Length: 298
Image (cartoon, one colour):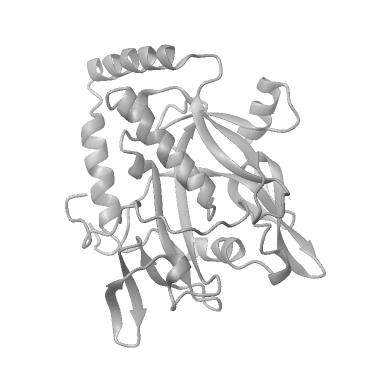
C-alpha cells in the first residue's frame, strides 16, 4: 500500500443542505432548507443532480427533500463520521494544520510538526475563523447493494455532535449492530442568539420513519444473521477501513480543494450562510484523532 495515501470509502455522490450561487461574478454560499443529492460532476450551473434525488422526492411525494433513507457502512461511529479541527491556506487550499483538540499536525517552516491543539476557539495560529471543525459523513442511500456511498461534508458543530451522539447510542443499544440498522437522515432547524434568532439547519440521524426502535433492532439482528450466513465479514471490513484511514495524514485530495475553500472561507458578507450550515465552532475535545501516530490502535 502506498504510504501517505488515505484510503477512504468509495463515493458516488454528495449530500448537501446548501448550494453555491454566482452573484456579481463571485461564487457565494447560500443556505437551503432541504437536502440535495448530486453527482460528483459539475457544469456551468453547478453540481449535477443524482438520479436518486428525483426518485426520493417522488417516493416521498414532496418537493423539498428533508429525509433520506440510509444505512451506515460501519458499526464504529468514527469510521462513518471523521471530524477534526482543520486549517487550510486561503490561497493554495493546502491543508496546513489538523488536530483533535489535544494534539495537531501542523506544517511549519521546519516541516510537519506535532504540537498541542487547544481547539479552534482558543488557537492563536488559527484565530479569526481560519481553523474550523470539518466533518465528513459517509452513508449508503436507499439500500445501496454495493459498498458505494454518498458523502455529507459539514463545518457545523450541531450536525457533527448530533450525528456522533446518535450513532454511539444506536450502536450501544443494538449491541454493536449500527451498520445493520435501517436509519434516515433528517434535516432539522433551530435558532440561537448566535444566529440572531433566524433558523439554522443541521442534520440528524434517526430510525426509519415506518419503524420503532425495537423493530429496527430486530431487523438489524435478522440482517446480520443473513449476512453472516452468506460469509460477509463486517469485522474484517472495519479493520480494513481503519487501516486505510490510518495510512494517510489527511483524507483530502486536490480535487476536493475548490469545494472545501468555498465551504470554509466564503465571502466575508456571507459567513453565516455556508454550503452546509451556519458555523458554531465550539471546542469538541471528545473527538478522537484519526491520525495513526496519535492513536496507533484505532
